[in-house]
Length: 202
Image (cartoon, rainbow, N blue to C red; front, side):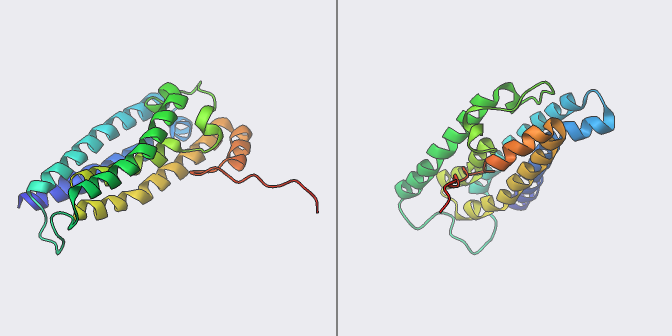
């Protein structure tokens, strides 16, 4: 019973609520058109609550170790843990850098949307969503450190939500910044830098 309660409420409902609220948090400009002043503050609240749900969802990962579902998967990987942990670290290093660098270059907008905030610089001159590209691996890295095949597989379910969040945010940024953001979007990659096209004429 505990394993199913953990799965339904912590791993599913909390994590999906976290992603749903995060998507709502990236739409302050559209929300402002509906409710006026207070939209950016409300989106900041959405993002804060999203973080709480994410934390609870990660607790569900730990609980799963003690109360796993009756699924036809081994409880741990059939390889030495040092190998699994090394894979986790190899993923964590670049993803952690992207989260750190993205948060640094975005400033306080990382946690609190600000209407007066201008377009970002730094790593955002190359890719538009460095933080999301880094954050999307969080569950997978955690699952690897916990040495759980089921949690590793489950972590991939979250990936489409990050893409949904990125697309939703871009729609709102077009409302917020207009043509300057469209121009910026055309010259940068969503998650990976765009290859520069040669201007040479054969």
